[in-house]
Figure 1: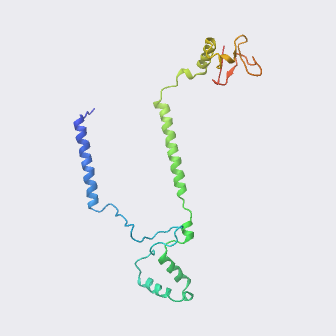
Figure 2: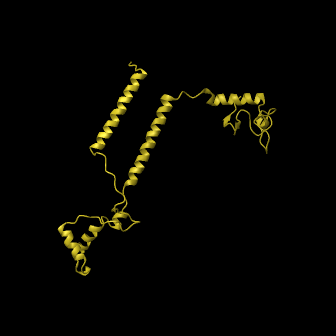
Figure 3: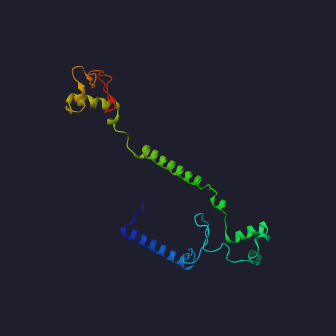
Length: 198
């Protein structure tokens, strides 16, 4: 097995950090990083709550687009339906129905949630099988019934606890309305949730 001293590990980490910094600065020098957007300039966006963006969708117009813009200044009754749609598309990218159209993004979100829930379940199962120790014997029903019997024999908490609710003469648990209604062999204490065996 390879053992590294603290100095060797430190120099290895320092070399990696220097390499990462120089690579990122090289990337920035070669303009691989996306350019920042100047938010002071007018921008175009398709949003339902803001129907009129700061600038039209197409800034650079072709000759056909320029002639169409000249026709726009005249009476709109002379424009055809296709020309009106083309004029709309010069100013806006999407119509309101296109903006309101539902996407299938919810499927991706639900799929991601189920994937991570499944992965978490697999990790929990793996830990319960391979990581956690076996269950202690004190959780067995037999152990719990012996523990309850010992608590009754020692008369633990005789004022308000289980010993106060136990009829020692009859060997039964008492209830408020009907004292001595349960048999000791099959009695189940609600606070402990297990049966007392003789």
